[in-house]
Image 1 (tube, helix red, strand yellow):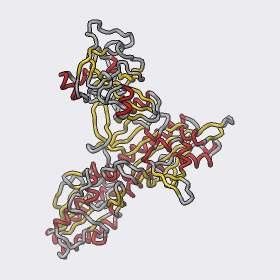
Image 2 (image 1 turned 60 degrees about the horizontal axis):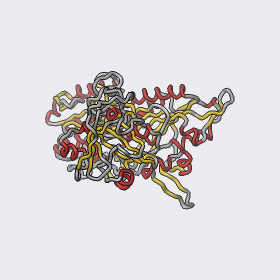
Image 3 (image 1 turned 90 degrees about the vertical axis):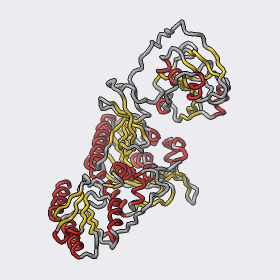
Image 4 (image 1 turned 180 degrees about the vertical axis):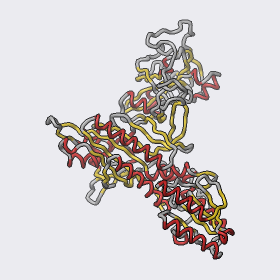
Amino acid sequence: MRQSQLFMSTLREVPAEAEVISHQQLLRGGYIRQVASGVYTYLPLGWRVLRKIERIVRQEMEAAGAQELHMPAVQPAELWKESGRYEIYGPELIRLRDRHEREFVLGPTHEEVITSLIRQEVSSYRKLPFNLYQIQTKFRDERRPRFGLLRGREFLMKDAYSFDRDWEGLDVFYRKMYSAYERIFSRLGLNFRAVEADAGAIGGQGETHEFMALAEIGEDTIVSCSSCQYAANLEQARMGAVHGSDVTTGKRNAELPAMQTVHTPGVKSISDVVQFLQVTPEQLIKTLLYKADEKLVAVLVRGDREVNEVKVKSYISSETVELADAEEVRLATGAPIGFAGPVGLPLQLLVDSEVALMQEGITGANEADFHLLHVRPGIDFSLEYTGDFRNAAEGDSCFRCGAPLSFHRGIELGHVFKLGTQYSESLGSTYVDIDGQEKPVVMGCYGIGISRVMAAIAEQSIADERLIWPIAVAPYQVHVVPVAVKDEAQMKLAEEIYQELTGSGIEVLLDDRDERAGVKFKDADLVGAPYRIVVGRGASSGEIEFTALDGNKENLQAVKAVQHIRDVLQGRF
């Protein structure tokens, strides 16, 4: 492609709305343009990258035995009500009505549609198993779209769905998809980790893993062991056993002072209490009230810990868990937020294991401007519901090997789920087994955010303000830049290099524009081709400046540079 003919518009200034470097570079390089908040047009450079990502995904999906189909983005709301997710998905589900007042949704995912299809088409074990996938635009009304393609309202996604007779068959599909994802993200040149995860709104009845690109701007926290291969996202991370006194026997130190009420005017937050009483956060017992499916519960964690709402939700088997509002807290405790405590509180108390092992602690007194000292877990409040209800913290021990846990930030690229019979039972997708018994189809689902992957690759591929795409997804593999198009020797050599490389099946962008050298080089940094050939004053003797994959520059004969590129790319592909 000749750059003079390429629909490409670069930006010199960083757009004000771009918070992270990948978003900045994709806007500045003319890959994307914002249409509305969280909605983007993909310009030719960006679309080329996306198509290459899709190609790799398709190759690995089909190598794993998946078959491609295409489903509608507009879905009947009745299917979502039938599955039970219409209300669960909440305001992120974009709803609309047609001229006949029939209700539809714009699909953020396709479990309902694919299950509806299978219940019509599959009734016998003879048609099972199989795996279907599509690459399609999805829609989600994000409350706060941010970071460009990393969290948008409209995005490109690959979603696959497996169907089998039993859980053993699902295990086979799950491992195939897991391995396919490892190959996909490796081929895309990403630095990634597979981590244990929570199923979220998709649901499921078995294990689930997220594939995360390591990046400081990632919205997710990855907890990994410094010794073994254990890794999980923060919501799912498990820690080693907490050690301390035996809470099951109720043995406590009889010498502890009696519980004492202290006046703490205006002291609400943990930091306020620490400063006012001259204690450490570890001495505090934090009591937070949550509304779980309209029922209030209290969760107790140490003052230096954070409640893990996913673990709470799982423990009490609720559909939703959210912090109680100020009025709900006042009605339940008799006090404003900041003074809740477990003593005498008429709610189910979910006590974190660390709190259960404390000899004593400081809590709210359920009275405005008062706290309690020397509160004894198991004596002053019940330990009936004790478990792991907190987020892991850096330095906690691994539950597998005991080594310290470390934290990283990550961008979610893909997710694999064992759905089991959740959707097939709610939507009536069954088959008749070999023994004549009717059984629900056993399902798995497997997603990759295609447009998000492009942003994640860009985030990991920027160094010194220069974007260098991995060869597998670069919009052009080689960028040929003659410094002065009016110099006949330079243009002649640049054309020869261009023709020779394109004739070898290599994708080349030739900058034939009559622009200043500085403009060309800045644009080349934004285009991000893995190889760059600058044709300048040495053109008459066949010499060029060659920039290789590692960013190193050297002066070479053009023939040698061309041969090197041909050897690497043809060997790679």
